[in-house]
Image 1: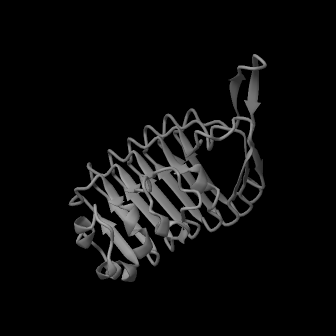
Image 2: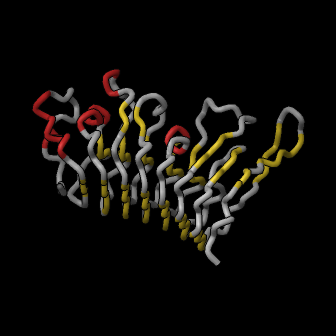
Amino acid sequence: MILHDYLGMMRVQHTKPTASHNFFGSFRKLEFDITCNRSFVIPSHIFPYLKNLEELNVHSSDVVQVIFDTDEVEVETKGIIFGLKKLILYDLSNLKCVWRENLEEIVSFSNLQEVDVRGCGSLVTLFPLSVAKNLGKLESLDIQKCEKMVEIVGREAEMEHAMTIMFEFPCLSYLNLEDMPLLSCFYPGKHHLECPLLDQLYVEYCPKLKLFRSSFDEDSKKEVLEAPTYNNLFSRLKR
């Protein structure tokens, strides 16, 4: 099903959903375009009613700032596993974040297989750390023309600087990064990245992107190399 407006979602934006809103449960695909006039697309209290959603396409809007509003998730919403497999975001000039933070133990997007983001010029990071650590089914990641993007995964404020983060993408076979002049890293801290099935890697006009980066340790007064470990990242790449 394709929507060009919010239908019942507009009416329940600031109220708790009732049984009458169960029609959301039948949705497999949602599409929002230039007619979307809300700053966020999916309010947190709608989460329990969209567990069967498999594809979300949001495009051509100057109003949208947040895709998944998880700022104030109610108790009954916690622990939901989304069925979302495909996320497409095109030409959203004012998009600030896809997911609000504080997602851990609240909502899981572990079924995501394809993420395609293009022309989102205000987006600085794509994934919160809690989402990125739970993308075991992700097969394709395509990010293009996000001029302000600095890192693909953002660091959480409470995360210890010295902690090494493990990122495992056992199904990822396609990765495309294109036209992002400020993109400097996958994740700004120490991390281990494993993509054993990656066989298509494309990077174009990302002049600041580095596999290794350094920072200054205030305690030791020495420069610390934050070297990600890319095990099995290039072994299957097509020549």
